[in-house]
Image (cartoon, rainbow, N blue to C red; front, side, top):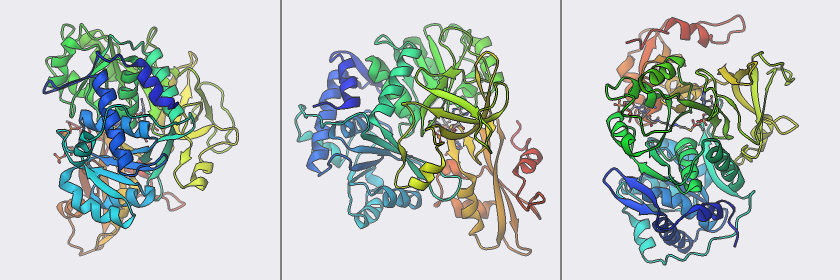
Length: 503
Ligand code: MCA
Ligand code: AMP
């Protein structure tokens, strides 16, 4: 039976070729991938997962966790990956909103997650960082020859939650063809072949590590070093036997600071890709001076996969995100009127193409509000197109902080801080941070006499928000700056604290 995305993956899989090698030297061939994802798909089916059911997964990165994503495709389920940093308080919302049939978690959190999941009639199985757990035991009882469930281009393959500027997170619904069309476009644009070996040091619960890195590798029949997290020493060591690395700008900032980054160390590499957050032109230049490689920057979103990329051949221009990918239409519009602006003028970036998601899970009104009538998606990013056609991202129309490639919506952090006794109000901003690009920073007004200090605010946030969302600093002021309309002027705060994290 036809399974739109997995059929393409299967067609590129040469059974004896290496697919994954881990830091400990564990190896998986494509044949192993087909067999293991088949057994896992059998286990999912036995657990009652039917086509269209959500399978939520909060598991440490491992080859087995990636196989679980593939098993979901094969059984027709909707894969719902969750950041391992999310607290139980955060998890509760996702489980309540998506009502997954099955939730897969680390054995350490099984009991607490089970109490939430049971309430929504779901079941819980486990998968640990070494590939063990109850789900794997069930898979061991299955055979390799799972018959893939029929899925068409428009069927859902995944839901990825993106934080919301107002209110709660929204689940972006991604179809089989959203993922397949984008991965094929990237494979061809970046010239991936089965001879490539990728250094995969990104998490696999977001678009970058899951779809961009893993799907492109799979659809090329290439191989990857699958690392639990980014470590500059390890990445440099593996460059001797790799060809490509993909990373967020923090990877490159850390590499540039490393004495081991030289022309010799990177001589066998053919491509370095950066995305998820702006790469500073100075990082691009420093990397190029030390290695002779021009980092290729591209631009994407959870809702759209990848939209633009600098060229493979031709100038990779620092500070730009290149040209729209084949099949993607991109325009810059007046944010108020929606009218297309001439090249060179700054406005809202809008995109349309097979890469663009189907909408937000159970939020038709929010979905409608973010699309134009002619089908263009309003990204919330402000940019311009220069005379040579390169797209520049010059800012964000959305109140968002990007720290080390992770998005943090200030509203979510402000809501938590505002609820603390003694707090009058707060404003959360991102200011330049040498390692993470932007550092989450809270500016708080407290009632006179309230006994709240920086440590107290941070302690209260500890179990409420994922670690990366927690402010790196909490500052106290008498009043927040406001404009004549009474709106908090975050730009003034960003200027005031611009040097807060300077080395
Ligand atoms: C870890 N910490 C962070 C972050 N990561 N704080 C702020 N922002 C972060 N991103 C915390 C840790 O909990 C720790 O806190 C302290 O900071 C230092 O940790 P460290 O060991 O230095 O961190 P790390 O483990 O080296 O991680 C940094 C990282 C990682 C390598 C940059 O965050 C990462 O892999 N980011 C990639 C995110 C990503 O894949 N984004 C793609 C989203 P403490 O010591 O106090 O406990 S997809 C997307 O955006 C779109 C679609 C796109 O275009 O790709
Ligand atoms: P997410 O919601 O995690 O998918 O993050 C998507 C957002 O990351 C985009 O809307 C942009 O604001 C930002 N982003 C991704 N790639 C880049 C890039 N190369 N340069 C600047 N911003 C980027």
